[in-house]
Amino acid sequence: YSIEFKHEQIDSLIIKADKKKIKQVIYNLLNNALNYTGNNKKVIIKLVNMNNFYRLMFINSGKTLSKKETDHIFDKYYRSKKNHQRNIYGTGLGLSIVKQILLLHNYEYKAISEKGKGTTIYFDIKPN
Image (cartoon, rainbow, N blue to C red; front, side):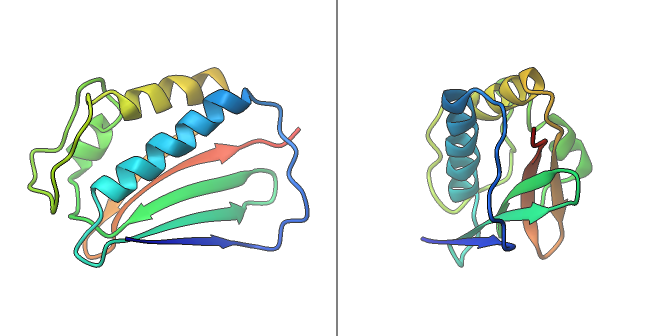
């Protein structure tokens, strides 16, 4: 597997957050991206300055999900019915845990899937 980290020049970013919980969010999103990546086995993590907030994106090149699937991806026990390249292990709770943590932090989040580009899951970090 290949993991690529892209970021703009960011000198420092100070946020008020539960460090342990945000680490859990990052772990779950990275694990999800690795589980559902495509044949190229590449995952991109991208941090983008959006002027008044930062967007942390986890991008995989796996199969495209429908709008209905991306609408439910954060639901408890939800899993796409599509075939994947490797066996997926887990409880189906990872993204629902991510959702709950991000809601507690008032962070916006979303899953976007584009044909030929895979799936991106992101959340927005509001600096203090």
